Length: 328
Image 1 (tube, rainbow, N blue to C red):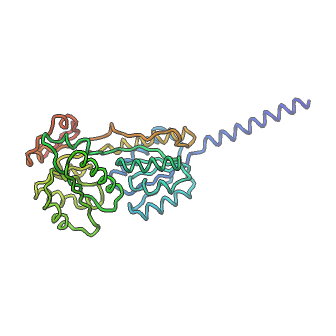
Image 2: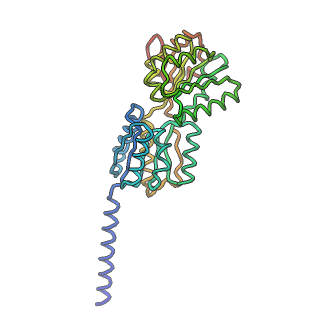
């Protein structure tokens, strides 16, 4: 009789443990999503992420955060996420990642954005130190294409960017090393916060440069048409990493990526982290190189008497010709 009671107790205990485990398994994983700001680029990443989460039917509960894009706003949100109830933080945007990765230490962090090599090195250092970060990224390295754009040699390169923006500062440092190694004259043009278009004109009018590479930042975006007109005035071809701006201007060459696809890959990585019990351990960063897109403008090339190489013609995704956009 005692043996029967003992067996019944074990059965009851097993049922209770099973119920608790089942309830635990059904609990959603709480994820905090930090978006650097409301831009087409970051919104596309977020949409790809949410669409893939829905498609995969991931059992997650999401806290949404959007910063204003400035340092103070990003840091404030990162501190809020650090103290919230999430176990995983998803950070969308280059500046947001670099500013928040050493604040959001309790959670696992997944990042998404387009990063230069120096910024990726900083993220890798954070990974070694905190062992809590992985992500998906594009590396829009124009140096891989610079000598492939035209059949002519590249002798000089200018880089127009906003001063004290970490990603752009890193890119400038990287370009300086590249140009030094390739015997290309490099002209960094770092814009102060109070610079006007006239200030920019005073600088570039005195430079003899083959290409002006323009950064992707708020100041450049807000003044893209003025910068385009200015470079047209001084016959300076522009290259950039923003196809949307390139489609609306006379930019010669643009390298960009499919940000919606980046978001889809981010969701797949999120699933992998969840399946790994919420840990980023042994999960490598993923470069989405298959999402890169190149735009070339034949009208601009004709204006500046530039002959595109066969390689760049083959690699291009968008071609602007006779004011029409051809998608290959």
